[in-house]
Image 1 (cartoon, rainbow, N blue to C red):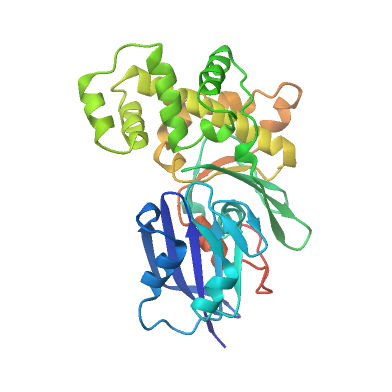
Image 2 (image 1 turned 180 degrees about the vertical axis):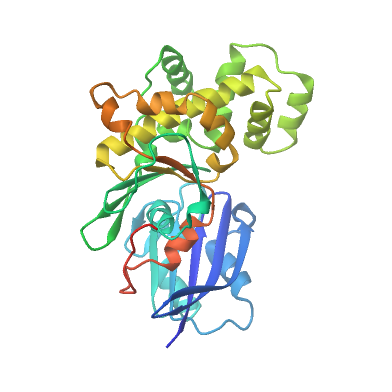
Length: 335
């Protein structure tokens, strides 16, 4: 017996929706579409456009949301959307609607990605079966989660760790913290490890560095600054852009290891989100590993951990589709 499931990944930049056929043997994708989140006044409007005038009967809907979930209500952190699962169920005739944290869903999704969807960053490559796995994902915001193995299946533990206080470590990071404190009442890791965070770091370094070249100023003014800064850094076209991504990578490595320590993630660390897949060459050659390993008395333990980038940005959508909370299936061991 099969049933049709609607799954979604609601992000500050993009919202992805997909229909899946669900059966006792697994789930099969039927149709998928990506929407620019800021182009819609509400999530309801996105769902209505995706389903169209003659939607198929839906057995359930699972939505991964970029923000804290309280019961059936979620406030999207980087959008003016309030998602009400009960109201969505009534409007679109969906018997069961579940909301889960986007990093909780992304963590589940990692378990269903093939090996080819990961890039190794040069740390240890020990297997991840039957061990806690840490997932950190810089994108529009910064998400963090842990995958805990209970002996039978994995459980994804959600968090809002990206909003924890930014812990500066080097003299340069202390100066960055003071720079950000002049602009924000609270400086979290997300102020550094996100799309806007890359811009924040760039502004900090540019203020104390060489003048911005005209060609770069023109590109930055034309649209989203994050890909412009990243492209210039990867090409080595501007020293401040290179320094920006080096600082970003160092903080990312430090916080990735922090998360592993907090959860004793002997199964390793996966870096997800939309930024890291574009920066794999830089992350491999930059300061990320140095900061990942630099954990004092626990350095020897951290050096045993695998560190990988998930290249498939659809992990939260895949995780939402496979979410076991409604009684469907069991989260499998990673292959």
